[in-house]
Amino acid sequence: MSKIIAICNQKGGVGKTTTAVNLAASFAALEKKTLLLDMDPQGNASQGLGFMESQDMDIHEILDMAGNPDNLTLENIKPAILDTSLEYLKVITSGPDLAVMEIELVNAMSRERRLERVMNVLKQEFDFIIIDAPPSLNLLTINTLTAATSVLIPVQCEYYALQGMTELFKTIREVQKNLNSNLKIEGALLTMYDSRLSLSKQVAEEVRENLSDTVFQTMIPRNVKLSEAPSHGKPVILYDVQSTGSQSYMKLAEEILNKEK
Ligand code: ADP
Ligand code: MG
Picture 1 (cartoon, helix red, strand yellow):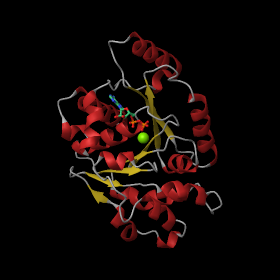
Picture 2 (cartoon, protein in one colour):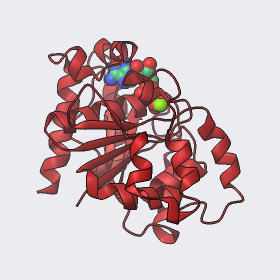
Picture 3 (cartoon, helix red, strand yellow):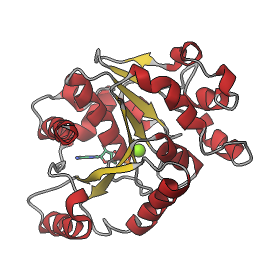
């Protein structure tokens, strides 16, 4: 059974893309067959793996193809599945066209289930599919939550960390009720934690009080290597494997795998 984890938070800059790229790379390093799917028109996850320009075929074409399920075969999707520098990690990229798709989808049939159809074809091929969601609660995010088996919520250790959480959990409940009754909460992940700052500690405590056991034990520290790695087109594990950033994403992957057991 493959696991499809949506990385979601409608706030920008909380560590979604960093988490998507580096969690996917950590699973791949553990020799799990992993796909990173970029669902953000900004394409940051694609760029973080070195795909700086729009590819011939990306998630936009595939979602378009999914409008007619007859066309949706593994054969037809394969050209969009690209190799990365890690043997076990593949990627489907995104680009600005996806923002246009979001608008086109509004009046389309089964507009919420396009990505789910794609996942039904792809899931047999992978152990883990990690989806980097856009910073909004739009139709692309609804597609992501409908296609996923669980959702991971990065929470930045900053003021207003919990702002927007009510709205996000409401959206998740709506999707569970109407579109995907199997959707689980994988957990909330504290990101950019700085142990030298009392603010970081306060926020971490507050988040643990509010979301209790949904919060992962593993916290992601603020680490400059995590912010430098994307400009080299690499996950941090290939940029500086010894860094605290690299080690913490490895720990997160292990925590998720241990929960499965
Ligand atoms: P989102 O996808 O939610 O918008 P990003 O993952 O792009 O957030 O992170 C926002 C910015 O913060 C990026 O410049 C990224 O490199 C940086 N960043 C994210 N996580 C960390 C971290 N743990 N330590 C240092 N910088 C980080
Ligand atoms: Mg992002």
